[in-house]
Image 1 (cartoon, one colour):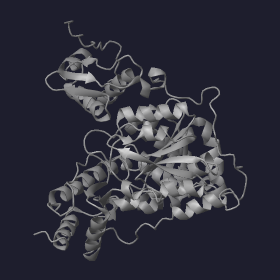
Image 2 (tube, rainbow, N blue to C red; image 1 turned 180 degrees about the vertical axis):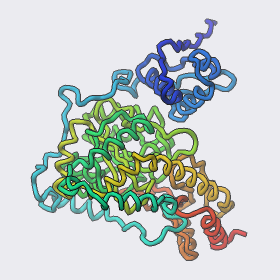
Image 3 (tube, helix red, strand yellow; image 1 turned 30 degrees about the vertical axis):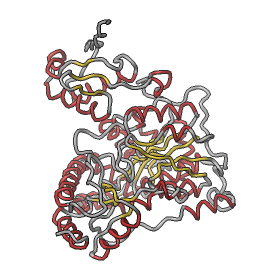
Length: 516
């Protein structure tokens, strides 16, 4: 019997850390880069945190934090009693067997931009003159109910703890802007958005997400929904097949349908979007995903699946629209690196929003685009709104520059964690037809499984009678989904109201559902 092959060894030589900056983040980036470019092969055994700390002359805590982030993102794995190893990633999931870590500076030679053939200067770009009759039928099928209005209550989905927003600080900054405004700022602005705000957003994404981007790649939008709509308008011709998660964010599917897209649902499993099902869609070159916290199931897309999705885009000259709608909210470790941080082929369009860390009515979001798409997106947006409202951008830029934004994010994350814990602690158990409350590691909502759509509707109706707001999971599937494929559940947002109000709502639910 042959001897077992010993694991590959890891040599920390070549890892240079700048002690003036965050050591754990630098180490995480260095190790992640070595995994992606093949210098750290699958199965390589990493040194114990204490040993690596000694080799690099840094604290063990810095190594532990770097390892924790790599664990969370799936780059490394622990083997009980046997140490830490580089995770096994299929070479087939990577372009050419590996992924370059050099930041993208644009499109490679010959890479088609594949923008919609509808003319940008057409005044009826999104009108019924452009959308043919079949597309209009799809629009009707994708009709959406309006989001709930009024003051937030338990358990409204998609609403952050905006009762904690520092409105006094915002008011002072807003007053300062209007007290002595720069007259140049009161003229027509840049269609891409305020240059200072774009620079600060780029800096924030570099530090918090590991996303190497510049201000020139960013287009400010009126919320995430406008960003998604721009992607639909510019990347979809009538009849084009567009893949969306199923179940998923229905408003995204609606935007692609309005643009004339043939919207197809792709199943979601425990690793995220099913890339095998995606690959089976002939002539599909656009996929919309929420990888950091799938909406509404809450699944976090695995690293292997992320690489497989990027490889799909590369093979098909396709685009990926990545909606990182609540990526700030991760309850252990730093936020996960987005798909866009792994993309080296200029295939990912990254959608971000301020609405989930400030308040929904702010209507301020952004797109991070491959360089070759920026001009087209800016010109398309100028057709609709010319540019974003000036003072909101200027005030947000000052809010970020003065450090209020980062402090507020930390406060919001702590508040969301406390509100999540209140929901988990008080959730009524042994409700007939209701599955176990899942673990909640990220985001602002959780989905609890229910046995059957009829039971889902009954539970939600009973909750509505006592003033508790719950969404049904069955409503998140595309209209064309076969009934046998639709799963039932209850989607609960836990961030909208304080823990005390959550406790009151849970008591009402227990009474309505007959739980003592």
